[in-house]
Amino acid sequence: MPRLSAAALRDRKRAGEKIAVLTAYDFPSAKLIDQSGVDVVLVGDSCGMVVMGRENTLGVTMDEMVYHTRIVASAVERALVVGDMPFLSYQISPQEAARNAGRFIVEAGAQAVKLEGPAQRFGAAIRAILDASIPVMGHIGLQPQSIHQLGGYKVQGRDPEGRARLLDEAKGLEAAGCFAIVLECVPASLAKEITESISIPTI
Image (tube, rainbow, N blue to C red; front, side, top):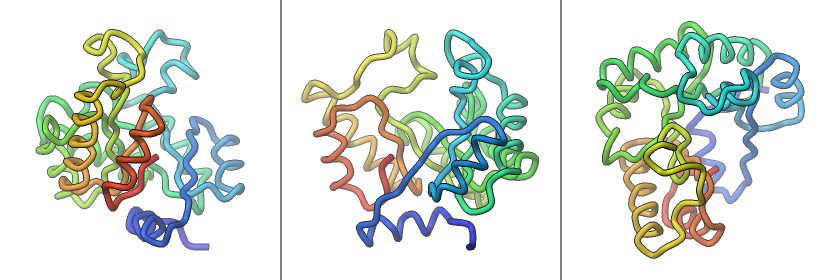
């Protein structure tokens, strides 16, 4: 069976088909996930906490992410492999963002990357990565790389202002060219509203 593409995921949403996404950091987990028929395997920077035992994801490096993504990609034959861009790998400049995204493709064998934050802040980075022909998955709601700014791990979008902001951010990421968006720790009703308001898949 051919590998799923970012474009194919958008087609699945249009067709009303469900999309399954799981996280993996190692070869056996990735192999089992792929064989189970999951559509997307995300190699998250959460490996810093889950695998390395760190307090948060902020200290995870590009080298560590490339290492884990390479292991996962070597196990996956069908699913789309997405590498999670760690803290400060895309925030410094669009050029740095594209260079680091390229490492996930060239060195690790991923087919796409994910980054946290709205297009209002990182639109230039997203465009630079897309200009390098690398698909981008967005991520809004709770953003672990911003925990010091957010004040910890809290549900986002509970009040009307927060709901409106997240809906606007989702539309911004769609307009910027993201092929899908992760919605982390948001109320189910808001996730439903966002999903119905944009054409790209929400995870």
